[in-house]
Length: 324
Image 1 (cartoon, helix red, strand yellow):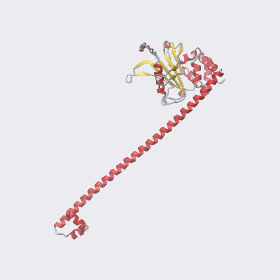
Image 2 (cartoon, rainbow, N blue to C red):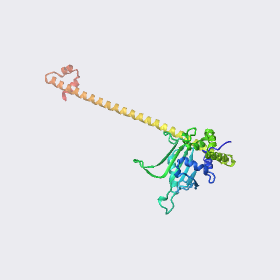
Image 3 (tube, rainbow, N blue to C red):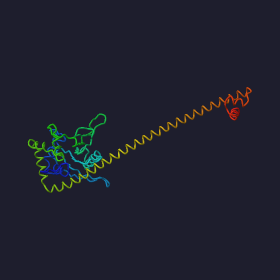
Image 4 (cartoon, one colour):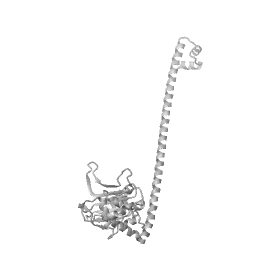
């Protein structure tokens, strides 16, 4: 049977975000993402309102994909993003700030603010230079690396980096392979897991049940088209930004070449000025030498004509040198 692509947020929410239906798959999924130990294992969740109104008149409201409270009181927000828009990290921090400002009621002490965990599932590479597909972040001191607080925890899962096959050492991978199964057309591992993994059996049963509902398909197809359009827009924007950056780089090279040409021209002008200065100095020394020679010959009885012939000067030049 044809299954819905769980990367479409509508299908993802039907799978993981429905009260009294999704808990058997959502809870083990969260435990695998957070790698919880037996001491802090999540055993139950309560679904919260995913609409957060804007804080100011000109502010931006937020609609969360999935927002729950665990049995430990932790708040967890899960977002799935397929379009590679710029500013993903800032978007995450904005979501954190919007959620965080709702966690304390008037009159409550700041110590009452619960831990907030943000999980971002991305169908693109956010950190191209790193290899791990799952990375987590906390607030640390810059020098000592000491943890400031564990009240904020951010996870990024980059689906473009996950391996093709499941290993027992990576329980999270079974969920990620399920999210990518439709795109990769790879169901063999999942069907094999169904026979030995009760959690995956439950998950696959729910997935098939959702995919059988004609009403779900109508909403799903509409949303899938929207996301495809958004993804294409993001790709076109990425190409445009790349072309713009290349144009800026070429312009910078041209400006650099022009600056170099101007610098060489200035050096050439400087060299020419120096040559003219040396020429003028040589002319002054030559004139001084002629002046001294003319005076010497005239003082020793030579006529102007004889001096001119001897020094190979014109009469006018001899007269000029004799007057200086």
